Length: 448
Image (tube, one colour):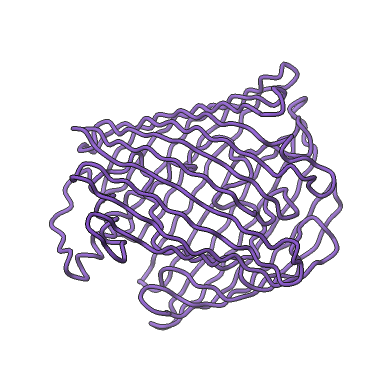
């Protein structure tokens, strides 16, 4: 860690709690949080989230710069469920989208109700070699279930591998991931669709023992979509298959009680498979902060500007605000207030000259009613605004509002079992749509 943490007793519950608090400080999210133009797969956004169930046990997400080697090592040891020599193993379980929805499609006036669920079981294996190298790989097969619409039942898979090391003042990380996934409706996608991606990445921290350090990183991603006609009209592979080559620099400063401030510059080239008409370059500059989980204020945020320069001489350049944040404030140990937002830009599959901005804001509150019961509510209001690169004029505006209400009780360990009810409302001016959908079901989450 950068700075002194103090001695931690790994044999006591209090020591393990401190260790997890220390590790949580490192979660910033350089893999995705600083992307300039996310294409249809943001962590949270104006998406149809009738889906309340997500349980991914002990997933390693240390992505603050090139993760500190010894912090990664400590988390590997603490999260592992069993050990064989220098190998550490952690089972993975994902339960998502389990429940009943009034319609499995968005942007369609006719309701298509169904019972659905996504369930995955996998394993993570880690090897610590000579206190100098960590090798890690995990695989998670996922089955998507629909009770009535049986033709939508399918398998997917998530795989990723990483290597961590250090040399003197440098933290080093290299990674590879491959996903082949069935995606449910989100953003402009009104129906389930399938895509796959592969990504190679590398990151280097300069000055890992200092409170002021520099991170350099690169990511090389390939995205491929299903070639079957989408909604009987669109070839997603022809419109959206592309490569992303990203390079970035981030200056980080640790302040106060291990709060991290950073300034980030990033350059991304988009190269489309079907032709050069949509090839583009994006540059962004961001300011942000990551708060530790030890105090009243937790979470992270970043905000900045993107300059998007299409290679097509007929298209115009465009600048847009960009960023995302998710910040939590805990009061009197019983009340937790949250605020979140996302400002991102996406390519549209409707036409090669179209792009759309996602402007999403929301908040929520969670209250511990007793030591064994908590309840909460969230509200999210988002707008999808479509523009043409030809003249940058507004072509269409959609509004999506989502509400979620839930109760939860402790299950065992730090897991909780709950029940949630979700309301989703869509209004589109050009498409002349205005309707409400709902979802209800149980969920299991990590943490109570």
